[in-house]
Length: 216
Image (cartoon, rainbow, N blue to C red; front, side):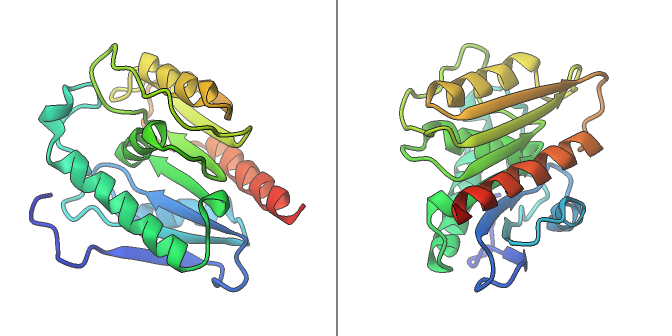
């Protein structure tokens, strides 16, 4: 991803900005496009969410495996994390503070967001991380910084997912729980690297919870 366009693409859909209660930063997976996240969010059907979705120009956010040494996924990982920051800047300029922003990702998109979240010094309204976890070899420790103050985090993963080891999903869940997040890691039988209907419902419920909390 070193030959990125000078103006990175961030697509938007969902509720009009003046009617939305929540912004959602949505990151697609490897070999996917923003269209895949758009179709998923249509199934989620949260009426008051405004979606902001970065585009991976080459269809991936980093070239190697989740548990490769970090340097093997550079400079693409840093490029992807910069895309997260650019999307967050656009979200902020659109009127949504971090406390009104949910992170949503699948596969590599979930992993990039997880990598950002475990290093962030502040919390977001919530997060949905499907088939992902922060990057680095086994034993890589997440920074012990930041507070999540009971904000909801949902992680979903197939028990034998071919790209995300269970230990990394557990380490990601633990890192966010240690920061005070209300974390649920839901494990499904099998090895399908997809978003299932139960995860769709869980995403819908988390966004509805965030919307209700913001309205309270």
